Length: 218
Image 1 (cartoon, rainbow, N blue to C red):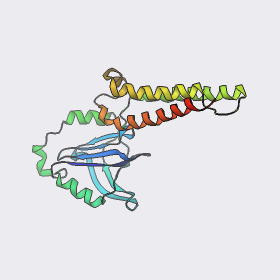
Image 2 (cartoon, helix red, strand yellow):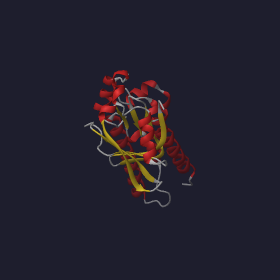
Image 3 (tube, rainbow, N blue to C red):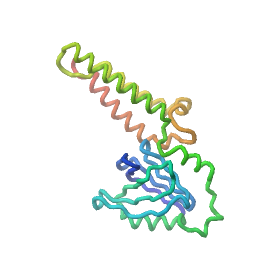
Image 4 (cartoon, rainbow, N blue to C red):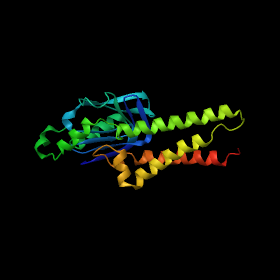
């Protein structure tokens, strides 16, 4: 086996991505754990201390725990899988990832990986993420303050909620289709494929909520 590709879930620190929002890719010189917005982690063989089975609930709460030595990454890194964790570890070994004899044959882009690791696992630029959260909260607070001051009864979501959801939907859409906007959102070296699943999911949720608010009788 030269490459292992699996779909599952992941836990990075306290954040959790459920199936199918995480993927594990392993070759003989690199291990990538992509949990979309939760984190995109990349390891060289020498970055890994050990990989061990991890169990919470059989079948639905099992996976592998990646013990590593990267200071910028969260200490707790788990890949959730429906497969037997011991079988996953066996398949990782088959890729040659743990084979020290392959050191001279490996073609790892060490400088690129080191730069990614320095940035931490979160793929989105922190100022952009903070900006979205602040705007979201301000618009929702204004929405509920206006509703409370009007003394009206009925559905409490109005223009503020519509604006907040619209900004989220539009931000996701622009990230998907615009290279220029993507450079504002993503950290250097990150790609659309690192978060595209999450973007589609967020667009679906915000779109459904927008349609529900707009169609709800005032």
